[in-house]
Image (cartoon, rainbow, N blue to C red; front, side):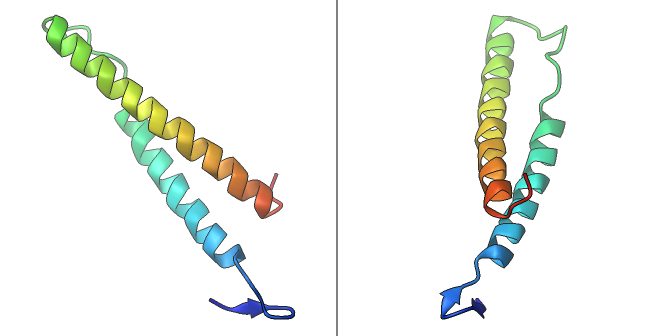
Length: 77
């Protein structure tokens, strides 16, 4: 980690790297968040699909919040 000013650690590089990781994760998760299948089969399949979609949506929401926090800290918003 590099230092900036009077011994203050420069976290901007770490924040930018984390922001890149978040963007990549969001891209992957959004690709996984496909519309529900019409031929889900039965109620168990439908419930499993819904649960998986809700979990992915929750992960996306958390990553979007962290992304906005980092963007704000970096002065990008």
